[in-house]
Length: 97
Image (cartoon, helix red, strand yellow):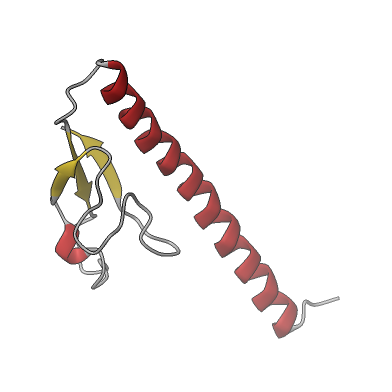
């Protein structure tokens, strides 16, 4: 039997939510680790993190302005975001500088 359009939409939505939540968890774990490292003295308390986009034609209006913006670990980027993802199916990541 074929999947109805409404069932397909529901499955797509479930996949979107699970992808976003999994990525959020990994990203939050990474930034929490950086904050713990700074507190423990493994890295400087002034260490920087940097937002990195794919820098292509598909970068959204939320992420585009954040490309290569840096902030101190434990502080938000401009606009209040603490870490990636900024939205569902966000392709950005962060790096420790």
